[in-house]
Length: 65
Image (cartoon, rainbow, N blue to C red; front, side, top):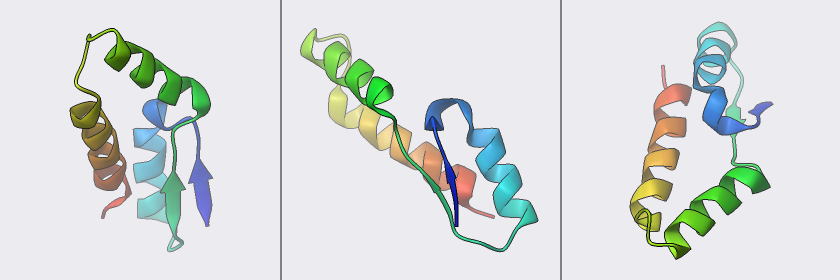
């Protein structure tokens, strides 16, 4: 398995690994990314559920062939 962190800057790396190697690929948000979304949601700057779904969708798209 290949794990990628921090996720938000490595979509291209996730995609390249997925295309080159036949192994499971994983990615996750580090605590700073999580805290950034939580803080912005608490201030009303963004919709937390929509942002989290977008993050997960991005990871899924990058890991697909």
